[in-house]
Image (tube, rainbow, N blue to C red; front, side, top):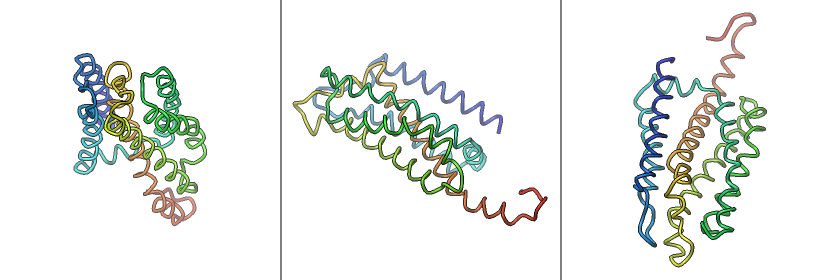
Length: 210
């Protein structure tokens, strides 16, 4: 597991550097009134790579499931920064069509993340924990969808160009897929909780669970 932890940290660091470099080279920029397809790929590809690795590697899957669901959930407190979307929209830098749902959704997730991490990341609160994770994923999906399609829905409105350049480009190309992966891991962990809880209860008193 230690080797996977080191490898994962190195990959995340390399991913962050790549996202910064690609943004600096304007690889995520798109033409006027065109959907930011490159930015969309920057969101989807990391998640797809994770899912593929998780599916084909039992050892990596075991490592991912061994991570603390509390820590993974607590990381979402960073999403309180969603107020930036609303602030930029108020200055005409981002479209309200994107900023309101993306900003308010992120703020709601960020504000509640600590309470969920400390009070709901355990088998007896499985349903509410799963519900919160699904809500967090839905918020990200809505934000990415509106960010990608805003120019198509309102071609004469404010574009989402600000999301394709630094520093805002790091949100869709790094933070969003990373948070989405954290949600996936937490859901996979919660699915195993009933079986694990039943196993612990079936153990005779004084005999440690396997």
